[in-house]
Image 1 (cartoon, rainbow, N blue to C red):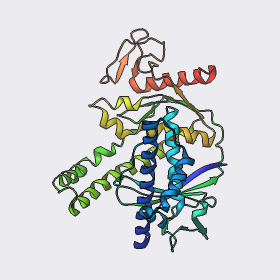
Image 2 (cartoon, helix red, strand yellow):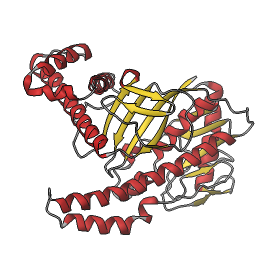
Image 3 (cartoon, rainbow, N blue to C red):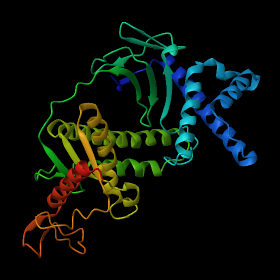
Image 4 (cartoon, rainbow, N blue to C red):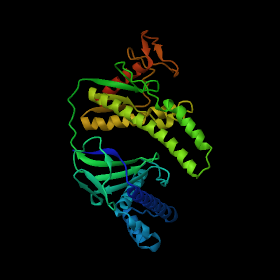
Length: 367
């Protein structure tokens, strides 16, 4: 039994849209208020304020006439945002994330509801303070009644609802296939068997349309109605690019997980690699980090094994036949001949073969 989220798009009525806008605003305000409260307490008094202290302060804040409008929405989303802030601080203190930042009005808006704040009757979802159920476009069935509901609005003005459910995921039959994959720009994935996935280059395909809308946006007066309309058009192009990229990566990772028992992949520092001004755009568009993340959780779901090898392992420069290692190799060289055994290697396929061998060694030796 695992927790699995099912995301659907929905179309709110005018009244629901107003209620959701009010809810998003209150959630954002409470998050920023609590972040300021905790930051000031630490920097001014060297005092840590946790979730319980900030929750008590929020209760007192709601009683004041100045902030009485916070009581017009369900109390669950505001309490949940305090829990999210607590998680953000915990990740910061543990060194897993940066210091929490303030939420912006023009960014993605979201609100989380637990079981006490929504009704699930005959497959229809009704949120607290809402009179009518949400008009959800169901694309698949969900296995059980949701335990948590997250409503969000993206920068393109689209509304989504994510339903967290308890689901039984059957393990896949054991396969004898093991591969290593090399992540690249020309081809998103190159396997040790020589298969290459190609790279759709979603940003490049929409570059002309995106540039046109960005030029129009730059000529609008900031804050005007025409500025907001032009900004929405730019956001819709970005949303199309992001959706296309996610769709491609999900199909690719699902195929890799279903066909192979063990997958070896190289550990990459994407944040450091995108500092290269010539390759930053292409690296960001290919989505290496998201690909590895999907491989990891899908491997856990379906009983597969994902092995990450050391980022400094010379997979590209090492000959997969005799083990000879070149001193250096430039990115423009797509194939090379080993000076020791005279074997001609395809750059990416050779790297994938070496990654597979290193991954199996890590799996066997544990280091």
